[in-house]
Length: 282
Image: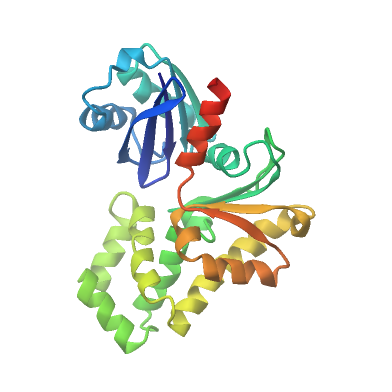
């Protein structure tokens, strides 16, 4: 059996494959090594993996994760997995490679991830050949859920939302300004907190102010990332992630302004990524 995992900062999708067929799947918390300790991975897997799975029968694990960008960071994930799967060969890769393999298989093009965070790369059908650094939720993540949430919550705190949206926000979240500041600056996982407002933004995305906010987020994505890839207007551009999926009309509108064309948007790459590994082992 082989185990394929795709982890964002919020959730991890796990798929177990045996003889080229999916026999089980489950979901855990996201394991970003910037925010996760190895011990957390072990305990989360212990509580979430299906009880009928013999972990000693899993020969290979392919883990793709947000933040898995260096040997030091990858070792945090590897050590956690190795505690739970001591007999498995474990391969850790960045979630950009997962997105590239899922979206393009062996074709080439520009990959965009728009989930809790954001990232992009140029893929040649086998390897990532260029990546404009994302910079994370404080300095970057343009187009991602945490970036959009940051734009929105800033407008809320400055009192720039319409009265109706302002009231609706307070009714749903019951958050004071001080509580928001505390969650961002004092509590764990502020990126998840910021991205959590995307559901509310999506509810009001037809509002002109909110629509402009969403398009600003995607415009910043194109200005700081996509346009920096050579000949980007002639490249296939494909997107994965919940933010790209739920705001795809605004995303395509912004892409058109930059003379770019997005021909595929997948909410979650795990299904196509699983097919990639089935073919690889088949």
